[in-house]
Length: 111
Length: 114
Image 1 (cartoon, helix red, strand yellow):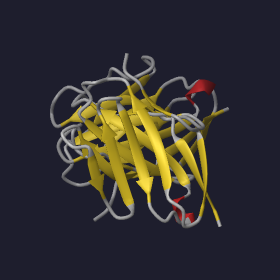
Image 2 (cartoon, helix red, strand yellow):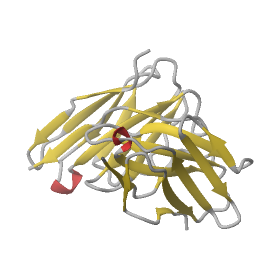
Image 3 (tube, helix red, strand yellow):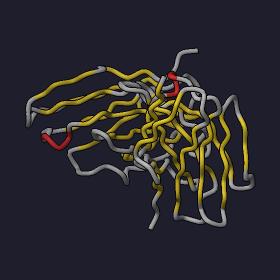
Image 4 (cartoon, helix red, strand yellow):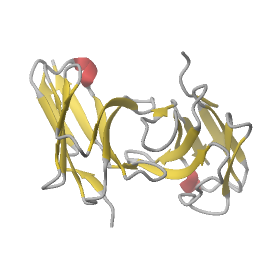
């Protein structure tokens, strides 16, 4: 069946360090992946996406890597800041109706 | 421009009552989605509207849940005879054309059923 999951429920990093949040997916037909950031009391906020014809995409301080061979997705945040503290969700989309979300990883940035 | 808005932000109701949750999508977005997020959990798909097509209701957990989208814009999610397990944050999202576009989320409505 379909599933999108995360390896670590909580990640604690020091301010200024790089953060890596991982996600596994099980459906090889998935063709679009998205990372969302959710702060307490707010809706998910789009961070970055990647399509299955790419293996890397960069944004401002963020990079998403896609390894289709092992069905693995990661989000890298450079020079992590206190404002990056939030829950991060990966989601997959197979061109169907909606997104399938993982359970989330909480990122805690220590000053 | 304005993002997705939802109202109310918080709703407390008694078990057995009906509730209506409202979503105003981003202007011009043809696709609208409802999700449910239980405490500490990921998002669970409920229903999806695309233009004038029949909605995809496959995620609705029971027949107590229903949704409408009037005029291709505002949507209302209705929960009848609420149960305590309905307590969650209900999130609405919209996207320009469909599921392969980025979905933009509203702030959610926190529903508490006593």
